[in-house]
Every structure is written in C-alpha cells, then in structure tokens.
Length: 494
Image (cartoon, rainbow, N blue to C red):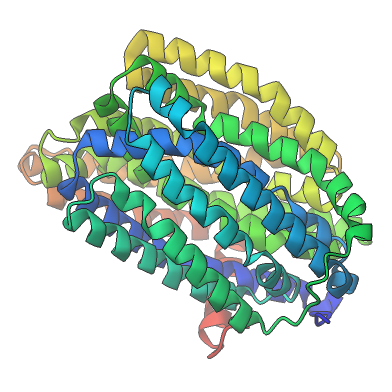
C-alpha cells in the first residue's frame, strides 16, 4: 500500500518546498545541459543535430502512447493508489511496447521522406527506451503521491548529468548523431532500477483487467491531448525537414534546445509539483485557485528574466565559442527564448484544469491550436526558412497561450487583470533590468570582448531584476526568499 502523504495543513509548505527543490534541480540540469550542449556543438556538425531533430519528430509523437496520462488519472485516486497500481503498470508497459514497435515499423518511411537513411538505426535504438522507461511509471507515481519532490529532484539531477556525460562521451568517440540515441535506453533502465529502490514501492503486478476500462476511459482524452501537443512540439521540425536541408534543421534544433531546455524544465518542474497538491485541494476550490495563482506568479517571475537573459547573451556566447559555425542559430535562440517563456507560464493553468478533471477542455484547446500552429510555421518556413519558423512559433505562443490562461483561470474566479499581472509585471521588470545590462554591454569599449559582455548582461540583469522585484513585488520576493531559506535548513529532502 502507498502512504497517504501529508495532511491539508502541510500541503502548501510541502509543495513550495518541492518547488524550491525542483528549482535547484533545474539550475543543476541547466548548467550540465548547457555545458554538454556546447561540447556537442564543438564535437558535432549541424547536420548531426539535424538528423537527431528529425528522429525526434517520430519518437516524440509516438511517445504520446507511452505517456497517456495514466499517472495523472490514478493520482486522482490517491487514497486507493495501491488498488490501481497493477493496472497502471501493465497498461503503461503495454502501450510503451506498442509505441516502440510502431516506431521501428515506420522508420523506413521516415528515412525515405526525410532522405536520411540513418533514421532507421537511430529510431530502432530509441524505440528500445520506450518500454524500458515505462517500467518506472509506478514508483514515480508513488513518489509524486507522497509529495517526495526532493527525492525526485535529486534523482532527476543525477539522471540529467548521466545523460549529458554519456552523450558527450559517445560524440567524442565518433558516434555522430547516434550519440544522442544510444544513452536513452541505458538511462531508461537505470531510472527504472533507481526509482523502484528509492520509492520502496510494494505493489501487486496482477494485471487487474477489470479496472482497465476505468483507467483507459479516463486516459483516452489525455492521450489525444498529448498526441496533439506532440504534433505542435514537433511540427516545426516536420515542416523544416520536408522543406530544408539537414544543416538548416540542425541549426534550428541547436537553437531550439538552448532556448527551450531551461524554460520547459522549469515549467515542467512547477506543474509536476503542483498537480498532486491541486488534486488534493479539489474539495477546497478557494485554496486550489489561490495555489494556482501564486504558482503562476512565481513561475512567471522566474521564467521572464531567464528568457530575456538568454536572448541577450545568445550572440556573444555563440560567436565567442564557435565563430560562425552556429551563427544561424542566434536569431532562433533570441526569438524562441521570448516565445517559449509565454508558453511556460501557461503550464500551471494546464495543471489546474487537469487537477479539476477538465481533460476535455484542455483537449479542445489543443485541437483548436494545431491548425494555427502549422499555418504560422509553414508561412514562416516559406518566407525565411528556419528564422521564419522561429517567428511562426513565437507568434503562435504569443497569440494562444495568454488566451488559454485567461480562459482556464476565469473558471475559478481569477480575473483578466490578475492574469495580465502574471505576465506583465515580471516582463516589465525583466525588460528593464536586462535592457540596462545590454545598454552597458553595448559600449564601444566592450565591442571586442564577448565574454565581458555576457558577464555584464548577466550580473546587471540579475542583480537589478532582484532589486526591482523586491521593490515592486515584495510579496513575491519574500515568498521566494523564505522558501529558499527554509529548504536550505532542511538537511534531507523529503
């Protein structure tokens, strides 16, 4: 059986401690991800990045089968989690095995459409990671139900570091684009062993087929939502893969990874921590609403400065490290850093709707967005290749995500002006702070000193943003400070 977890009085404190642990993981993962990305950029060529980007257009869409939201549905029955774990395990494993078979089956077609023979081997390797990764569904679900976010954060950091090290080592050994694929099944197997041991979960492995219809019935809408979301997440690569060369796709993929990795990781950490808490607050709508609003505000105050600093240092960072080899990625990083920040803020609203069981509402929103995304991206690709695609993605998120957040939050009594404040307050403060750093870094004295420009933008931008936040949003400043200090005083994550 699974422990019941914290009581209501401890929910806010445990969840906010979890957020800080996940933020710490994000910092560590961001640092390792940046270092590994830069090392890979030095070891590989743009075409290698293009090949792996095209590979993910297949695996990430198929992965919707392996992540149909079973954990979210079962977590809705948290108090009886042990009764549903067996069904969740076998459904997850069966769907992941099916997804792996589908990936292998379509690999020759993908290789033909993209004119990239390497896709057959790479897709076969990545397909193996799908059933291996599904074996960790139950222990991860148990840890989330217990709100043991510190454990998940520590393991997530270790896994991120391990994946980065393996990828770089394989690239150094001359495996080319396969360097991205080979570590995936290795780390999936490690994750399964580690999470079962860390969770100490004891569950029946009986199929419990009588319960399947209840789980699958609830996950059908979630699966469709995640499949449609995967189409949006991979649609830019699909369009570029059909219209452009591997080098162009590679430059776009490199820029997208640098821009998206920290923002999506931060947003994912917030939503993963919040979802179990929001589920437990279903019987207390006022507290559920307040928790979502506070989390959105905190997330936005963290995401906006990060996004603008990324955009500001992109040019000096890339040119100082690689010269003109990756220059084509600079405008992509700058555009996507801003656009993806608008997307990241909306993840809390999505978590709130899922916690309230409004899966069909989320589905309808995503289905409405798919055609708009492909229209904007295709127009961008026709007008200006990879940079045009980045403009299309940025426009898509700027149009759709604020509307989605307003719609989701109006259901619980959060006003349009409150939603506007979520976006505009941190964006204005971050623009002022980072803009000051950019202005100083633009002085003629620093024209030929890219590393000094990076340091100045970072130091002035971050320090001034902190000072402005403390002055203009003291409630946000105090909450982040108190929670960080509280976590630092806790010797063991729980």
